[in-house]
Image (cartoon, rainbow, N blue to C red; front, side, top):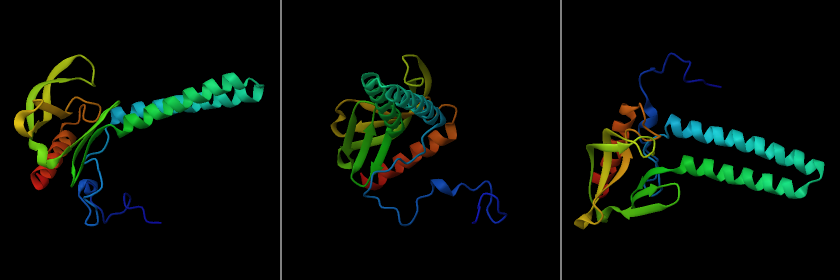
Length: 182
């Protein structure tokens, strides 16, 4: 079994995981960046909590209280759905357009309706909380100016907090998709 991360024929500085593979299908929706450690960590903690709730549901079911087991099972399923939705959030691109997946809603915009995608300096929300700090945001400007500039990514959200290089790569990737398919 080859272990490429331990062999001498692979350079440690080269990160080929961000490069597009030649067989990648541009018709499928893809996130042009990896989820950040804050988002993955929160989802992992929620899934750990869900496992304990499922264990409690099993114990309550074996004790004979089916109503309590049903409540625990429902709570565990709800926590699991929240964790999976947290991991799904972000900006997704394909040949068809740009999709912004939020926690409660998903909005898709065809590339023909996109005027520009650019990086700007502006006050941004810190980890989606009400507090704002000065930072960078990748904003979407719709054709005709409808709705103003919508921030897609910020350097202070759960994917890019303290990861400015990752934000720059992700912003460049989304801008490249916009230039190619607009």
